[in-house]
Image (cartoon, rainbow, N blue to C red; front, side, top):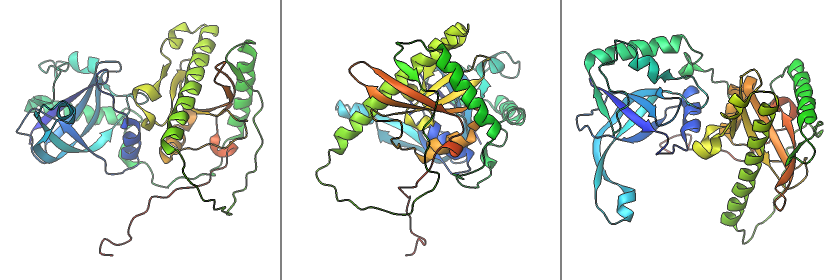
Length: 359
């Protein structure tokens, strides 16, 4: 059995579905992926490790096995240019898939500074490199040790209890939220683009089973989708700047420089939109929901977003941006910490499959 290193340069190539795929692997789902590789000896059962390069954090963030050996396919990008160049690919299945934006990974420095791994070029750019047997053996042991020493040690054995939309939330944390909102309100100057509202709307906790059926005709779905994305991005950028301003005012310019818009680098599948920090350096995963309407207007969450909120609830925040004015690029905002306590959830779509394959 061979072991391959598959580099991923996150600066050159976006991976929009990484966050969603990582969450699915953590919940024990079978997740497969197609990867380009230059080594024609890759066979079913061979081991693979994925290495993030290009930007920090750099290091190994995933592992798995090949489930389909090398095969040729047309490069779709080159095909559009009428160049019939073929590339070699494999299909792999993940056993661990970390999201480098939120998870600890086996960092590059730990590899290049260890005598066990110094003979391997961990910065090599390309489409797949064979790892020598002795290094591969040591890497497997280090990878297992890394899993035992981090909170990711049970990634594939997260309890599959489904999505409990109404689980009990800490009253204490609810109090912390109110204190935090008041503090943010105090440090937000009059005239800032995003005004923090210190009270959240009160809604009805009861779910309704009633349905109203309304026929639709000639809806411009493409246009509506484009407008929603534009509105969402505008709200995310306001929150991004707000977080930076707050950290600077709290004397943490070093952290303000690290705040980033994850939705632009990893896409919508990350499970959240803005990566920020509290004043003490603790990570904040912020989901932004924006509307030009009032604060009580309902909004949508994907199953991936909800799963992420539940998995990382200690560091998760939902910023509801409302009354957004495109002309002045201003809005108001309130912040929720325990969304299962503060929000109603109504399922509106279902994934449907046959009960029996023989049906």
